[in-house]
Length: 510
Ligand code: ADP
Ligand code: MG
Image 1: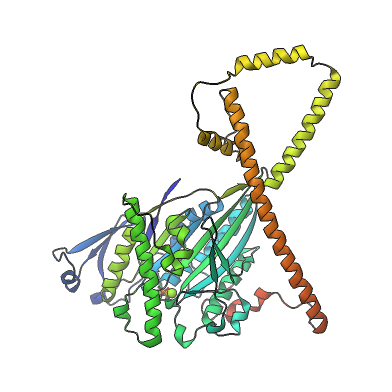
Image 2: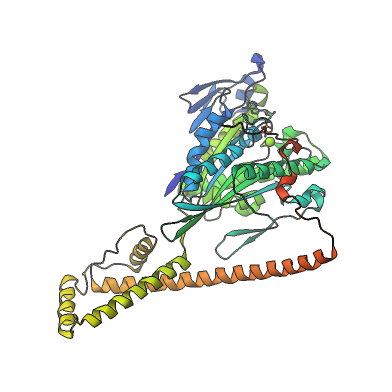
C-alpha cells in the first residue's frame, strides 16, 4: 500500500513586535504564502517574486493548541501504528522554533506535547481493542556528534557523557538494523511510559557538559514498540512508532560558533545535510531517475531512520518556524525542505507474521480429529472400494487435470500466503494440477517458516542461557554483599518533580 508523506507546518507565536513580524497569509489551513521582505528578495535568484507559496497537509497558526495539533497530526498515525504499521513523526526546524514544545511539551500537563499524549492515546485504545493482546516497549536515545546514547540507562546519571556506552549498529543479511547498548523497557500503562520519557529527559539534562549545553545540538528518538497478538487467530504483529525531535536546522554560517561548538555544529549540520541528501535522492528516484543508491549510511541518524525515510513506514513531518522576519532565511529553508519531503511516498505493509507454534498446535488437533473421523468411517463400513472409485470419478469430472490457463509459481505462492494469513477464506483452484502446485507451495512455505522459527528459538535459548549465567553470577555476588530487601524499582527513582526540563503536574482526575 502506498503512503504519501504528510507534512504539517506549525508557526510559533511571535514576540509581539509587529514591525519585525513575518508577513504571511494562510489559505484554507493548507497553504502558507510568505510575503518576502526586500533583503530576501535580492538574495534570491528570481528577485522579481514578492511572495512564495508552500503547501501542507495542514498549517497550524500561532494560536493552535497542543491538543489541536495532536488530534490532527497524531491520531491517524497512531491508529495505523496500532493496526500494525510502522510510523514516524519527526519535528524539523531551527533552534527555538518549537520542535521540543511540539514533541515533548512544556511544563504543565495541559501543555504536554505529542509524546505524552501519544502514550495516553495508545493505552486508551488498546484497552478498547479486546480482540488483541498487546505488549508495549519503550526505548529512548540521543544522537550527539554522530554517536548514539541510551537515555534510559540509569548508570548514565552518575557518569559524564564521555564515559557512556555508545549504541552500536549492526546490519544483518536482510539489511535490518540491530542496536546494541540500547535498553528496551516494557511498559504497562501510561504513567510508566511518561515516567520513562521524563527519566530520559532528565538524563539528557544531567548529561549536559560544556560541550553539550543545549539540547538543540542533538537528535532524540523516542520509540514505542507494539506487539499485538490476535486472540482469535494465529497472527501476531510488531510495529514501531518513532517520535523524533531533530537538532536545530540552522546553517553553520549563522550559528557563529568556535572550537568544540564548531565541531558540534559541523556534525549537526552534516547529519541534517545528509538527511536532505537522502530526501533529494529519494525524490529523484520517485521521479523516475535511475537512483539505486540512497546515501542512508552517511550519517547515524539517516541510517537509524532508513525505514522511516524510504521504507516500510508511514511518515509525518512537522515543520516548525518562527514568525519573525529576523529568521526568515531559516524559515524559508525549512519551508523548502518540507516541500521536498511532502512529495515522497513509502510502500507500507502490515508487519504480520503467523504464530507458528499456534499453527502447529491447530494442525495437530485437526489431524487427530481427522484420524478419529476416518476410524469411525471405516468402522461404519460405509466406504467400499467401488464407492471410492465413483467418488474419484466424480471429483475428476468436477476438476479437470489442467485448466489450460497457465498460472505462475509466483501467483500460486501469493495465493497460498494470502490463504495462510487468513486474508482469503478459501483457496480457489481450477484444476488438479493447480491443487498440486498449491500443496507444493504450502510445503515450501512451511519448511522456510519452520527454519526461521528454529533459528529464532535457538537465538532465544542462547539469550536465556546468557541470562541464566548472569543470574547465577548475580546470585553468587549477592551472597557476599548485604542487600536491602524490597529496594524500589528503577523507574520510581526518577520522580517527576526531579526533572528540571519537563514537570508535568499530576493528571487531573477525569
Ligand atoms: P526547539 O526545540 O525548536 O529548539 P523549543 O520547543 O524549545 O524550540 O521552543 C523554544 C521556546 O518557545 C520554548 O520556551 C517553548 O516553550 C516556546 N514555544 C515554542 N513553540 C511554542 C508554541 N507553539 N506556543 C507557545 N510557546 C512555544
Ligand atoms: Mg529542542
